[in-house]
Amino acid sequence: MKDTIVALQVDERDNFAPNVQHILTQYGKNIKTRLGLHNDDQNQGLILIEFAGADEDLEHFEKELRQIEQLNFKTMNLDFK
Image (cartoon, helix red, strand yellow):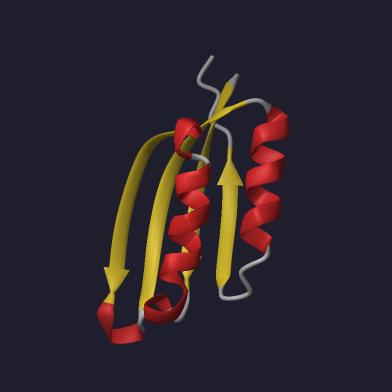
């Protein structure tokens, strides 16, 4: 199991936040930390997630996220060893 940071930017937040929330709920067992920020002026949301799980879990999570056209995301692994 490894930890990955996932940054999600949701455009058209009012319309697509429920779709994103549905995916996040599905992977709730893998989400250790979640921080949500919103920009009302641009109707955008930024969600930072600490995702823990096997590579396969992360791949499935990313595949689900790609289904939402108004969502951009980046992942990064931090290794401080």
